[in-house]
Image (tube, rainbow, N blue to C red; front, side, top):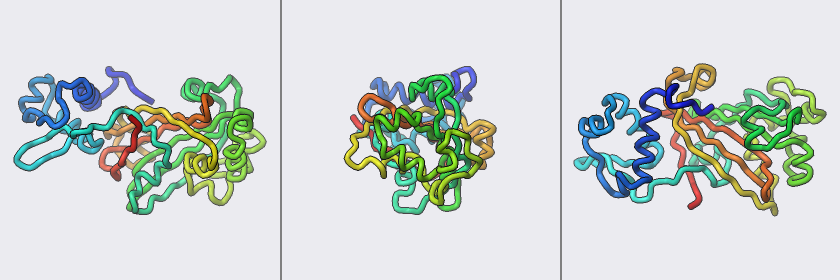
Length: 265
């Protein structure tokens, strides 16, 4: 999902360059960025690309705009990552209702992503949920979530395994479930919400990354956005002890509902 620098538009590469400069202290917390013309000249980029990158940085909480002062680096810029274990629909909602619509509920064999993050062996069967989250009638995020193989869940988190079976009985036998299959609530909740709801008394930990990217053609169609729309991609892995039990990719396009990311130090 993460594209190389050669494939990215200038705004995506530029976002990463400025983030790196902030964390490296080139633009320290509390400092005011140079004017757009000067900053564009210093970075060797066009002003339209710079303006888009700065907008993304504002939305992600690294920059603030102060009238008469300009763009300033926040005193406590968020660290990279998304370690707070809370369903995305709750974070996006911030008090407003968010609707989760199931696009796909199925079982699939491991991909490169799940082999890497869930340590899934070849020919394992993994539950896969793809969901569209909408706030105020606007597509706010596209989530793709995978659960670890059934035998892994039974060994490390049987409550999560049971909750998934209850929501997707048609997929319990290992055969792929048809689009939209599952229990009555499967299409209105995220896998992470199921996991947190089944984890009373179970200690969870998470690790993740936040990357700037583009929505792309297929996801652009799902989100109702042009393929070259800038987006933030959050990749998250949740573990019980040292064992990963769920992995996810959440794509949030520019202009969607704000995401108050809560992160660990």
